[in-house]
Length: 323
Image (tube, rainbow, N blue to C red; front, side, top):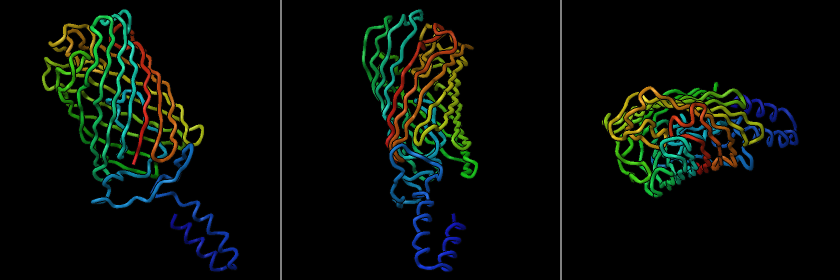
């Protein structure tokens, strides 16, 4: 970019004033706004105000230069991106239970809001689980209640804007704060994670791995989760996506006498799940309206035995407001 401005200046000095005025708009158009990735595209507008220093460098602004990526939608409680932004993410999930599972069918609807706050360019605070659930499983009384709360920190330890590569490590703590009637509460959980993103022009990949470790192995199951997201931008600001998610139960608990776990929705401390696996596929898309807002949606379906856990299918939609 610096060489471009030097070249324009040299040409302007050597030609008449009319040529100088003609070159100016081209130079201005080539300059990305406020440190934004030059290949980032949006459906409605790419305008974003200049970043201003608030308290200290990086506070609120976070890590710029990766706006060309599209955030994943599926497994929103545990699929954390490696990007460090300040944002609010509003979530709605409709999750169906298999008819032949121990819950005997029914569904749960979740309404939640995630919050992320960039503390520096690379360090961020994340609040990833909250909200309320309305559960109508045939094997349980219909009920509504609060979800458990989870929050933590993440740190971007590798950044390469030239190759569109970024990597982040972090951890969350889940409080025992929800309501039993919607299968929340009963366990405290620590979940360290590693997240990586890599771009290839308009093709983007994001992946992570998370270890959900209960503070008491009798109260909760140790669950290893992983996620892979891929998207391809077909229009400015619009990208279809495929996502693959998996979780593996690493131990049995003693709290709930069930042969199924809680998947990514809950940690039930089930007594007969050690060694079982749940893998599911998500198909969806995201629209980035401008640098501050985007909408995503996905439909998820299990690839493993539907009756082996609580996952029949799920529809998720989110709306992100970013700083």
